[in-house]
Image 1 (tube, rainbow, N blue to C red):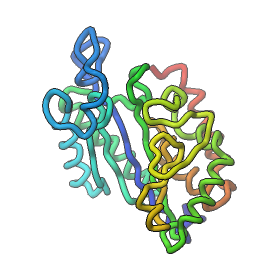
Image 2 (cartoon, helix red, strand yellow):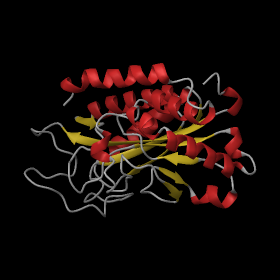
Image 3 (tube, one colour):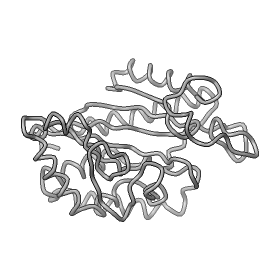
Length: 264
């Protein structure tokens, strides 16, 4: 981040998660009846009402905790999967993205504990036609925010294309289960981008395309990804041409490999 400080990288991190009941075994997501499944996805996204919004009091308590502690939380919403929520951190500059996301995650765990629930960070909690959980990462620099910045965005996207699997390796555990090409995801083996395309690896917001400058969204990171690693990879590959994160990348991949047998 120090090497890229001249570009003042800004991040917006969209942390998705699923709230689970602790009074059942096995634990089930909020909104899942015992011994069965809820109604198909459709009514839960940005919903209101006790029949489709599950855990709002936990989300709102967490939001207030983040505001109280000075974390740059900028929004929250219920998501597509029952009991799934999202909070957004940013815009935050440089290394502070990782600091704030980690503290926001800690506060969420404490709040969920208070309400007798737990937080599931897995990127595909329920296999099948159910949405997974991601950490869509919004990114911009001085060069993308100035007039004509859309061309820099396209240049950055080409660099990310060249290092697609390199980034995927650092974007979280078991991400192949989530990045299937279905349920609003791209396919993990194929790099793609598009304007307002929620099924692409990289989404260029319509406002960015219209203004010719702004930010883009990397939709590949998983909900269990390390925000320090994600922000480092995005900055290094785009601004520094991928010359600064090899050691970090290798350590992180080695760490994921070492813990895989003990994570359920």
